[in-house]
Amino acid sequence: MLYSGLHHRFITGTCDSMGKPTKVSVAATAVKQATKRKATLSTSVDDSPSRGKKTRKTSEESESPSAFEEEIRKREGYTAPLPKRSKKGDLIFADSPDIRPNMTPSEVLQAGSFGGTYFRPIKSGVTGEKYSGVWKELPKEWLQGLNIGKQISSSVYDAEVNTYKVKCGGSLEMWESSGWMHKQDPYGWFQWYCRFYLGRRTDDDARQISRWSRCAGVKGRWRNNLIAKCVRSGCAYDNFAISPVVRQTLQHWGYRLTKEDFDKGAKRVK
Image 1 (cartoon, rainbow, N blue to C red):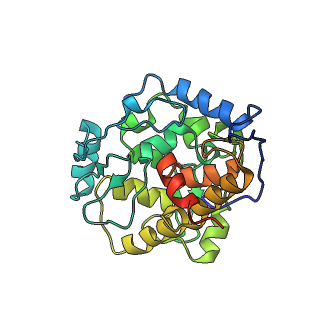
Image 2 (cartoon, rainbow, N blue to C red; image 1 turned 135 degrees about the horizontal axis):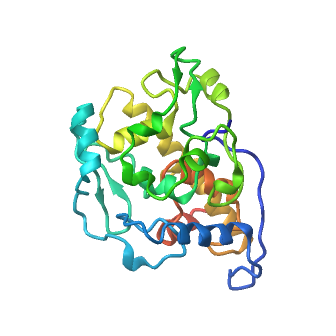
């Protein structure tokens, strides 16, 4: 099974002199399909590159928990407020300024992620316990319209579920043996993110935030890897034929490259 790592396979598109794609990539088609799947959803942010910005919240106001989110917060004793959405679309956690994703956990799942396997039944090598049905702890609206058995808890990785139609990630066993997995979140970083987003705070937060920063932050390895590939290929930031595996990986970490971030990062590319 595959987790938030990186499967080293890239699909490169071709561009004209203006940086526009000269052919339609599989990934671009997938994004459009994901948009159609989510047409009936009412989320707080436009998480699809092909949708208009008019659907994005731009005020820096705290997200109000839904009834389902509030129910979970009370049940689990989570007390930190939900993040604010900045004018550029980042999520701002008042007590944790070093993590600035631009996709909520719901948006990551709704976009098509983890090959549909993230919350599958597992036996954790960290806790020694078996887990199943863990997806049930999520707010119901996060899973609205999704096929749980295919898109959330499948035991078989299906790249077609993913936004960019590619595989990415390392096995659960690989992450456990590397020492990255902690007992409180036996499924890994994204499980931590779901709980952190809902207001849980623990001693492991600093470590998990640091992991996000090294992957998808301003100086993050994979954000800048993607920016550099776009610049050096002469393609636009949203040509999804450029490094779909990296794009999918970043999505699993709650981030999708924006024009503003691309323009800033491109200045550092040599």
